[in-house]
Amino acid sequence: MFPDEWKRANLVLIPKAKTPNSIEGRLPKVRPICLLDDIGKAFERIIAERIYHWQSEHPESDVSANQFRFKRQRSTCDALQTVKDIVMSALNSGSYAILISLDIKNAFNSIPWPVVRRALRHKGFPEYIQRIIDSYLLNRFIHYIGKDGIRYTRPMGAGVPQGSVLGPVLWNIAFDNVLDVAINEVNCHILCYADDTLILITGRDLTLLRARAGVIAARVIRRMVGWD
Image (cartoon, rainbow, N blue to C red; front, top):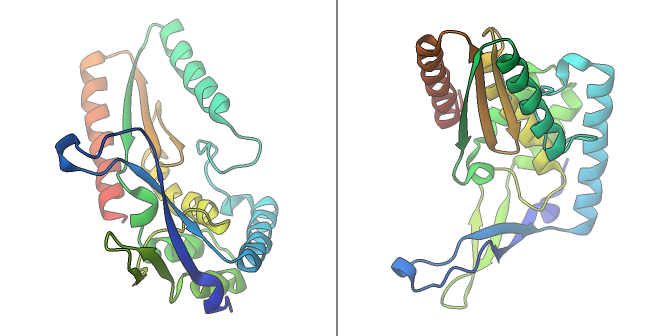
C-alpha cells in the first residue's frame, strides 16, 4: 500500500516566462510543481528502482529507444544526434526527409490513469508493481491557494504528479504506446523528449512522402487525444 498521507500534494506554480498579466487579460504561463512528502518520495524512489531493475532483466518491458527524456544515460544531445543521423543518411542516398513536431498541451496533467495501468499490464510488469502503482494513483488530492487566498483541496483523476519521482517513470511507460504507431512503418521514426514528439519520415517520392507524413501524424494525434 502507498499511504494516503504521502499522496497529498501542495501545488506551487512556477512562472515559465515573464509574461505581463495584462496581456489579453490572462495570467502568465506557469509550470505546476507538486510538493510531496519526503518519506513518500523516498518510497517512490524504491519503487522506481524496482521498475528499472525489472526492465533491465526483461527488455520487452522497457520503453522505446526513441524516448530520450527521463531515461538514464539519455539526453537532448542523443535525441538531436539521432535525428541528424537519420536525416543525413536519407539525404546522402538521394531521399527526402519530412519532420513534424507535436506538443501536447498540459500533457502530464491529462494522461488518464487507466492508460498507465494498461501499459503496465501490456508490458508484463509483475503484479506487485501493478498493485503498488494502483495504490499510488488511488485517492490522490491536491491542495492549492485560490485567488481569494483561501486554501482549497481538489481530487486528482488523471495525470502524473509533477515534482514526484514516479511521475516521469510512469509517463514514459504510458506514452510508449504513441511510439508504437510507427513500429511497422518503413522509414518512419517517432522520437520523444518528454511530451515533445517528432515524426520523421524519409523516402524518394516526395508526393507519397507528404501523404504518408499526414497519415502518420493523424494517427499519432488521434492516439494522443484518445489515449487509446
